Length: 149
Image (cartoon, rainbow, N blue to C red; front, side, top):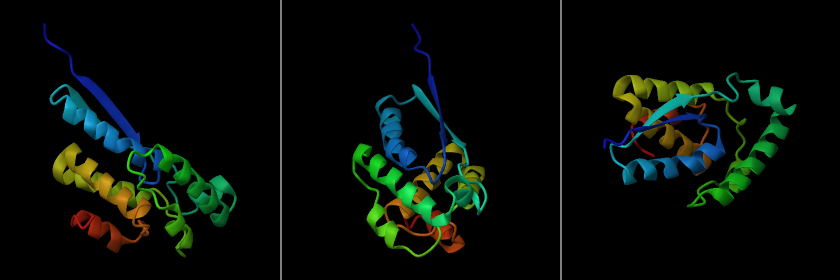
């Protein structure tokens, strides 16, 4: 009897702390069941425009405060506790919007398919949530592309 393939469509945003916590678990499943699970990445912008955080939370400052609370909650559920909310709280740049990072993921996908989208997504999330860089900065995205993360 032939076993059917499981398709997981992972809808995510580079801003999503819960996606950051979940991504390694999905990777582990695909490694444990090679050829049985197909992972498809789908970009879903939570805050597509520069004013997105302000529109959602009322102000940029309140947005950053609320989002860092999300980071803290998600970090408790991250197997490696990689999110660094305390460092991000010290950063002076505005909390980013979704579009630059998601466009970088789609550009990577155009170059190397779904697997490269996944790698770029992981690199961008690490640069933001662990190292606390501004992922709206094109130079940071270029570093992610060059695999410096």
